[in-house]
Image (cartoon, rainbow, N blue to C red; front, side, top):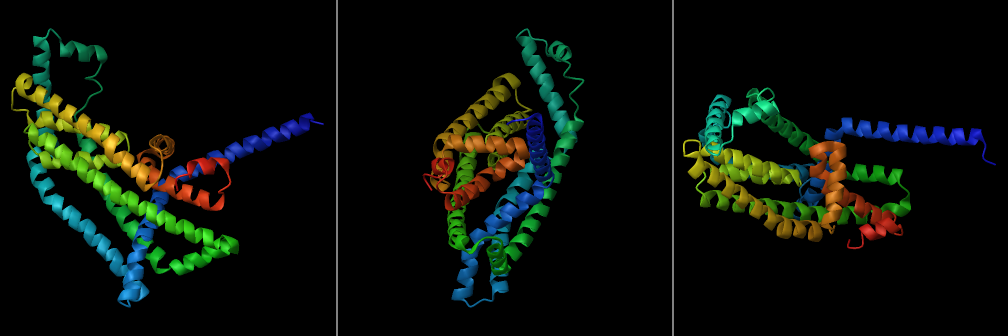
Length: 363
């Protein structure tokens, strides 16, 4: 018999459960950077492990030396990639005045005046429009200073994160036997084979994913560069590189990249006639970037998502959306690797679950 006491206890348990979930999500949100570092370190360790084993077996390296050598190779690879682009970005960035906020302010004022003149020719008063919309009171040029400061802060955070990831990865690889033993103690012995199978599948899928991602970004960068060179945009290399890197952020990144390319194209053509050169060039570049995104969305992305991690594009979209709402842009970046890991684990440990069967039918 259901009494008021039973109902009250049920309500209290439900409230307690919801409170626990809320506290857990809030805690995860607060330590999201640590979670990201751990996930990236685990992924890097899985990718690096075959190289470590090769050095140990082929060249008889000690475990510590093999791990150190492998991570050093990764560091040299990253430094090599940056060294290829930094001189171009530095030289062209100086011409573009990326760090000169005063020059940016002057260019934007000039661009605003040109736009105002153009609209007046078409019987549109930009001053009246901005006044009615109360835009001028909200728009301040120090936003650009804050924006570039945030970029510098992001670069600093990236450097700290990179060091942290390599530090964690070093111990994951060096003491992997200890970690495996620890996992074995936590989990029942009958799950040992499943764990090993999961690790191997995850390593293979993530390796394919990151290789595909690098290929995708390279293709996008080349296509962006072609578009910018066709229309004679100055600083084409640095603009294409920056916009391609933004594609790491799913869905939002390409939009930000297109807007950034449009703004930088207008600033690069600030000394030309607005109506006959600046505006048409910006429109053509924007259309070109849109075509590149169509190519990417219909060719590159489906290959990476469907072939490398064996997930449907709609499935990936929903996962990125949910993780993005919980953890922001950082969550969006790591959503696909994390989801892949969870799918593999689900298939190994609960293969008979109906939802897991549907989600992992292609794994």
